[in-house]
Length: 74
Image 1: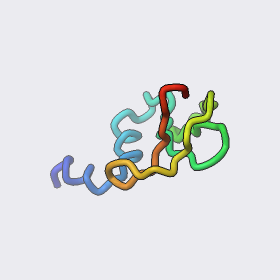
Image 2: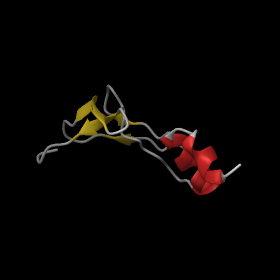
Image 3: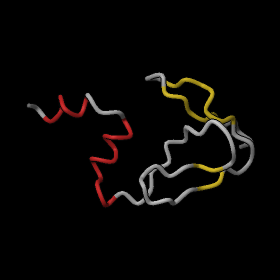
């Protein structure tokens, strides 16, 4: 089966992880819905902290994935 067809069945996060494999240092999808921690979903636990007051993942971006929104002051 074509590798591109297989990749279409994976979520975006799964495709990122499979593309980089063990070379992936950290991956912050910025889809946190509460708190101040930017969660690292690479499995390496390199979490970050949001500075300022971004609006957390309550806005559906293209693909219906919730994502953070930032204004000019955040």
